[in-house]
Figure 1: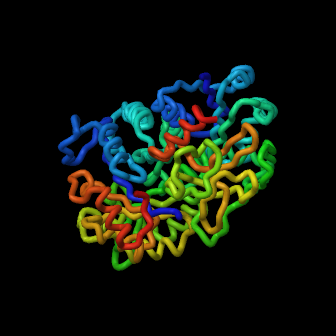
Figure 2: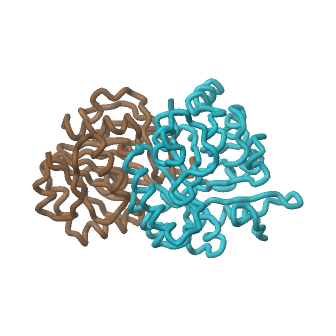
Figure 3: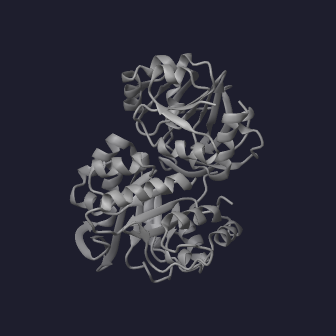
Length: 251
Length: 194
């Protein structure tokens, strides 16, 4: 039986993990490779690396990081952040990334999705969508949720699927950072609307939020950052609890 | 032991090379006919779209070589699918090693299947010491149906072939190089038990 996936997300700046990280057994809290290895051992099903660097050398630094993660880690991982061309994706996949996620670049030029799918296949193209509600309507936002667009979340998700994306990573900006649970109503609507896997992101604060997003939200995977980094929830314990709740997980 | 990973420009081969290295072996990436022919073990990877991968294979003239190999060959993911008679994806004619036609999952489930599923009915030394229902990582939209060449099954909408074997040819729909400790064991079995 296909299991529900738990995905820790690591924010990367200039090849180093950012955001506070609370791992006593970590020699170097800024080393993404070491953190990735720990998550893999603890039972993470996948990893997402989100690059937020803005330097000239970012492309090479990120490619180096991907290479070193692929060298050490035996679970799949996705890389996102600032990817805007076929060439960007080619470099990351050649260095060992399993999937890439694109966000603003796809909104600005939707044909990019078709181009990437034609060259690399649907299976490695994730489209990340950040959205929040404005007057009760879910609107797509850019630049980490700062810039609103006129695009409707559900229309965009449908278009993304039609253009061949293999997966959607949906972050609710209304829920992100609140620790009050995922945007399950919107997630469940998305899951009914499109026939590709949906990764839920934004709002994880406790174990029951994961159960809810898999049942009510019908999500295929759930992503979280700080609760894992600060060890508020350990992945092993989370998966044990999910199993008790009847959610299929890999233990 | 000389291990060659067939490099025909289709897919994430770095990960397989690293996985083999983690097991303590070195693998060479090659599209050279003689080098592949002289290897002890051949790994035939592939991700992406079937017809364009098959085209690349023909351009490197490896489509003639692979079916004639005598040493153990392991096709992974799209590699395994290309070893079948055909694929519905891009109406592709395959290498015809496995007597199966690869078809698309029905729309009653999300396509592609992405994630960790379980393998059952494990046969051959490829799965030596691997427990039934072990979790493995898969990403695919098309599948090989069950046949007498099936050596592991998985279920998604219906039971299908998670691994195949015919003579010296093995194929896994899943990615052993991304399937954590279980995947390591399966790769190690291919290198040492076959």
